[in-house]
Image 1: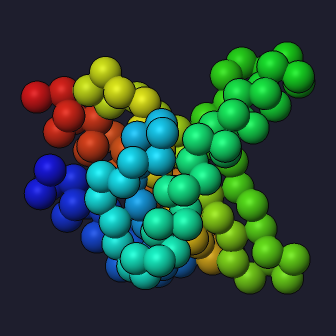
Image 2 (image 1 turned 120 degrees about the horizontal axis):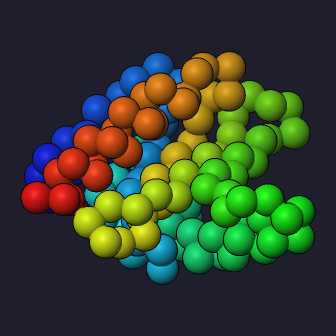
Image 3 (image 1 turned 135 degrees about the vertical axis):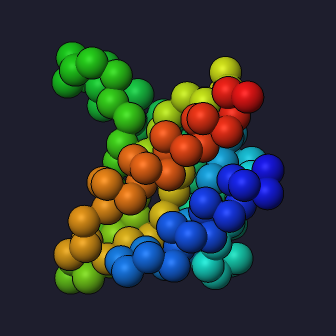
Length: 120
């Protein structure tokens, strides 16, 4: 898990990212970077966010959705949740971001690396 913690720490240091937490589907924190109180708050609502993502996909008749972003009213910061599978587990990468930065390449790279580490 040291490698996973390192990846999360590195992501949290990139421009546009502040607090980052990796959790299981129930919200159990596995690795964090940034403000611990914010990380705990992000983790605390993971299960509810996953329910909303699942229900939205069902109601909209879309293939399973895997991501949800919430933006502040002034759009200066947001909260992003990305769900993925790794090592036979459903995991969530949750973070506070600045939406004017591109997040997809950095989070996708971290997700791929976590999947590789947990497949061993």
